[in-house]
Length: 356
Ligand SMILES: Nc1ncnc2c1ncn2[C@@H]1O[C@H](COP(=O)(O)OP(=O)(O)OP(=O)(O)O)[C@@H](O)[C@H]1O
Ligand SMILES: [Mg+2]
Image (cartoon, rainbow, N blue to C red; front, top):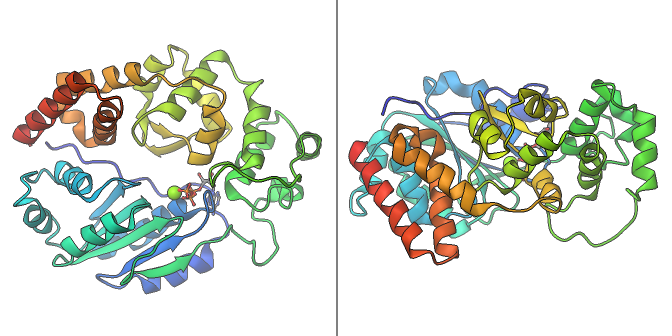
């Protein structure tokens, strides 16, 4: 398998992170393990991508990005083995990974959630000269340097988004919300004062209990502002991304699943920063936007399962870019206790391992 899996490109439009980048680049000594810890949408993943590109020459460009989420240890090592084309055999998998990482490399473990799984993975890979950046909302791991990530400029009280500076306090300095609001205004679809009026009219400053960390009312309000202005195709595409199993979706799959042939349906979402391009032609939605969109759309698990499993059955070489959809398809099959689906995915995994 020659296809290289994607590492996010250097983030465009990174604001207010000069000091953090300088400190972190200094702290990232060979073999270091640094966790960027902060609330949802505070900018950890964007900072991790910027940092990784900044220090890439130290690692001869050997940068690897894994969105690990809450996967258990076994799934994590399988994920890495598939990516590196090493054995999935339980007895040899760690040795295989350590030899794939024999040269100094930088591995980003994005979205860490399961302390036990990540601790075991880090200890398993400890014999290799690998440097790790972890992003996490919280992190109870010893042996890892914790670096707090707060919203850009929140501690200085300045605004990192000058076009919508007047919205900074209303949007609680959230770079996720400010970036979307900034894109609305940049597109001339509205103005900062009109958006302020909309947010105030819809109670942006009201105090109530949030459902969980992805339930950010300011972002839900911005999604609501956009929803009535988006085409039906754009709304369907946003729904697909919000319900997709895997991490990110290639544009062709997205258009197919959203039943649109109009590229403008997708570019409208990009223009308003409601989706992020994590690699060329691969899109995702942030967890907070996903939560807001899920409330407006219906899941379509069978359609998504069929799309990805049949895609990989046809073309196994796509596993490097679509592996999270594959693991999520397996997860889905287990969740709904669909034995036939489980066997189909297991068969596919064995085929993929043989062709690695
Ligand atoms: N420094 C920044 N400059 C400009 N925009 C930013 C910055 N940080 C974050 N953003 C905006 O906020 C969005 C969310 O950032 P990011 O994905 O890095 O958050 P996160 O902390 O990793 O969230 P989560 O905990 O949900 O993974 C980005 O896609 C971007 O739109
Ligand atoms: Mg993140």
